[in-house]
Image 1 (cartoon, one colour):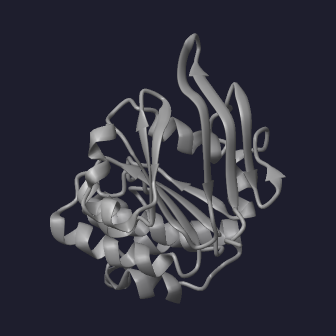
Image 2 (cartoon, rainbow, N blue to C red):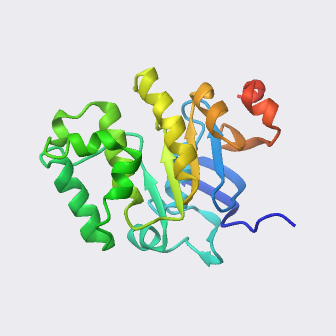
Length: 230
């Protein structure tokens, strides 16, 4: 028998007013698994992650995390339970230093062990007194993930992690995602198929608010041969 599912999304539908965005989404994530959702702009990827993190309320359907229904819970409750969302806009507190950004996350989680943050992102230790406004896009992405892993989450939902980043930083993120998955599951969404091919163990293809394919074959993932679904 395979590993039990840590997260199960069942018959999930979502809309913005009268405009329906998600249609009967079904997916699952297992412990320590690296899963990706690929699709074009407007496919509904971000909406799905926000529904899973309780930042948006679906019209119908369920998000089950370790046997608990998340729909209806507050987003901060979901984060405290161990499922955290990292948005694509690379939001950090611009007037605060890296140290102060991490201190806020430590205060929220009660986790002051920054060694694990610096293990994955040693550059943040060098930049510890630099304000967020003066960080590059890649450095902000490091800080966002670093803040999120405080509290030892079991699932990270990471939206468009490579957007706007230099190729060398993307290469570093590939290694980081593999290392992070030793401690938690990762669901990432995006359009960078090269990144997905090097990170994901399983891929969902999304088109016009629907999951149109689930790809589990390693060779198909590495060769990006699922791109014809998009």
